Amino acid sequence: MTRIGVLALQGDVREHAAILEACGAAAVPVRRPRELEGLDGIVIPGGESTTIDKLLRAFDLFEPLRQAIADGLPAFGSCAGMILLADRITGGTADQQTLGGLDVTVRRNAFGRQVDSFETDLVVDGVPDSQDDPVHAVFIRAPWVEEVGPRVQVLARVESGAAAGRIVAVRERDVLATSFHPELTGDQRLHRLFVSIVESR
Ligand code: GLN
Image 1 (cartoon, rainbow, N blue to C red):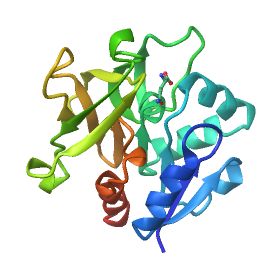
Image 2 (cartoon, rainbow, N blue to C red):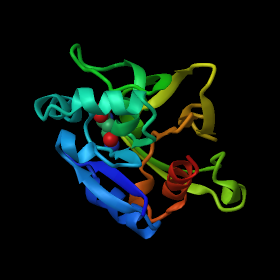
Image 3 (cartoon, helix red, strand yellow):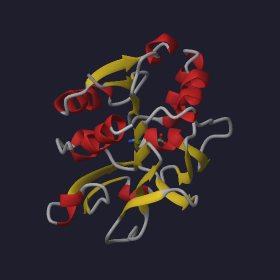
Image 4 (tube, helix red, strand yellow):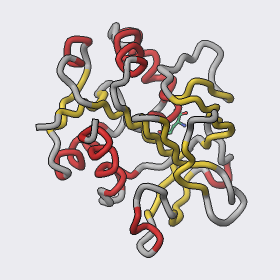
């Protein structure tokens, strides 16, 4: 069975684990370096990226997880998870570090106060039926992707409103990230995409 770790230091861990299980994978909570052993992929949940960064370092997980992703462990991050997977961030705190893996620059809390939280429908490349049946995306103090490197695939952009055109889903090799929280809506299609990325390796 495909074993997918869920980084379980802070954030919406249970929601990700439940969807992964519904997609037929075994969801493994990860709090210690040895729990990375034998994983086929890792999910980095939404939460607070500065807190997750500090806890990663406190639990001696930062370096082994950074290395595992650099060595090709497939990873999926939502919201704070996207920030942690970005090679570069703007709007971070002075000492904030990221695991990296995606050649992108991500802006934290990008959507500004008025739209701290909002919901919208998206067509997501890689979710083929989202043309007819869009992905309902929930954004909570979300980042957006400001710059992408040449190998990064843009999977979704906000379609309307003040943030129209902003990049909110990306993939590079086997690393996938969304500004929004697919784990909160009951829509399993992003997780199914990630499980299929993991299983096609
Ligand atoms: N604003 C948070 C951060 O910077 C992310 C919010 C979220 O994950 N919902 O980490």
